Length: 132
Image (tube, rainbow, N blue to C red; front, side):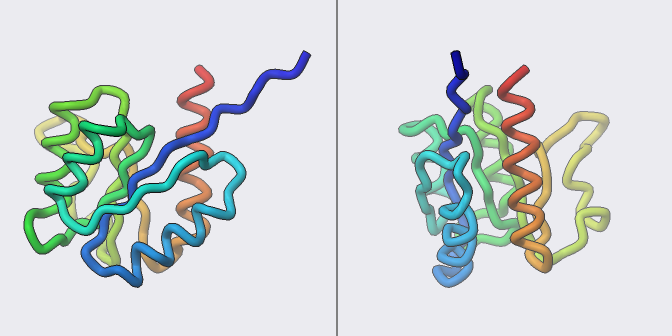
């Protein structure tokens, strides 16, 4: 008897369409991804989380309508099951992404300069978390 591997649903959020397309192309190649959705704003991302309850929300730090941190805060308030990964070209250490006043904020960080490898690591981390 074989156990069916969990497949992940992901929402990619970036206000730059070409960046969303690039991320989606990388993720589409991964056998562990079930559904991919796109959002071009923080407001759209929050609405998609409410509607879809995705496993992963991958959100750019800089959006036109709100910051990735604001999206992170909203999503963590409405969904206990969605993991939020921030992504940017900035260094994570400079941003204090993971901790604020001792509280873990984001589930992870994906650096745009190493996108393919870091997306693969994100998926591995989530699959491991889901199998526990």
